Image 1 (cartoon, protein in one colour):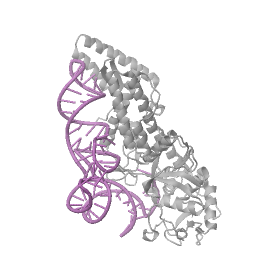
Image 2 (cartoon, chains in turn cyan, green):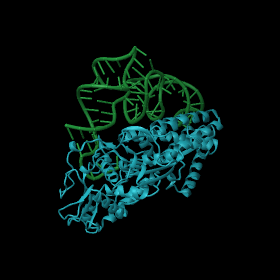
Image 3 (cartoon, rainbow, N blue to C red):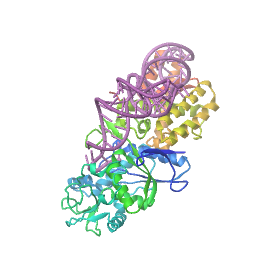
Length: 472
RNA sequence: GGUUCUGUGUCCGAGUGGUCAGGAGCUGGUCUGCAAAACCAGUCACGCCGGUUCGAAUCCGGUCGGAACCUCCA
């Protein structure tokens, strides 16, 4: 039985889906105002693992992850660059998709963009105005606000009392009745790109931030769905406001609220505005692979904060390589095995609020057993361990044989390298035969410099192309 | 001011009222011409002060430190 920590009730609860056998998930995706950094990608990886685990647990999963393709920052860039807002949004969306792919994050079932749901937003806002939860501004600005005072439970998700909150200040205070009221619809401003507006019953304008998610969840998942996820930084005001407006419209909304911890660097949340960001390209420039980054992100629990450091990432890479090494050697020696069953410890860990940290510990147990079997020549036991290890790796999206990680590997080149290395190893073998250790080691050292690591095994030498470590 | 999270061994990082986290590192051993990999053994712990308890790192109170949110944010 899967148990998940729910932010709203602030406790770990049994996951009971709305419809037996089905699970509906909504993840607040990114605002595509720039390329993603690894902090952004953490939520994608975390919820990808949740999704895989739900599928493994027998659920039919509908997973929606949105793209916010219009917001203040995108509009500012639009003006700065003299390009339509959608050009900027789409450019960054493409970068985001590439980053997800490199990390083996599966595409969601649906990936709506905020601007694709404008009619649904209008409908929702209309309902809220009708039932007295929202009001069009009286100053002719075209803004429509949600009235926080109309919803007694406001603050339930973030556990705050409205009277103790600092007043929100959403730009110039136009015509809010209460400073805590938030915009559902923003009327035209002469200072913004004029191609970023839609007509509406309240005049030309653009969406407020929170309404998009309420509209998209309703359209793709219905008035009630199982899990709503996002980073902890979204709890307030974004998720609080989403829940408030959807419930005010009569929708029960999310049954579970999941929030992942932040990726920090230098003691602060990784953020472009702080300037402490690391992206995938920087990781690769350091000689580390995306799959190793993914392992690093799954090593701690999803709700824990990660204080990023290269040292810790490199340690994680070493740990992953240990697992990877077993998978490769076991496959070579014991023959391939399709993924089989996960260990009981692994399943228990995953069911316990997705404790990937404990799950990885369970994985390493089986890897060690498999290595022991290989050392003892017990190929049956090794093959059994291999199947289990691959099953567990697959659920974490870390299987080294996953085609997602083979991208960019050119088979033709691989064969050429294979032949060249074989030639070099022949020379080394003959040097070893005449006990010319210096010559033999020279061959090995040169291969090493070229990025080819040679190991002698009872079955003869084997070689692997290691990730090139950074040189300082 | 309010809300929430957090402080574990050399490092990363789980967890539970009493019995092994796991990984990285280091030391010793096995194997190897040497290495590498692997295996075996060892290494090292719960911010501080009180309290509850037969027993607490795990519960409670206090205290010190760090972070997130209350403004755009994964």
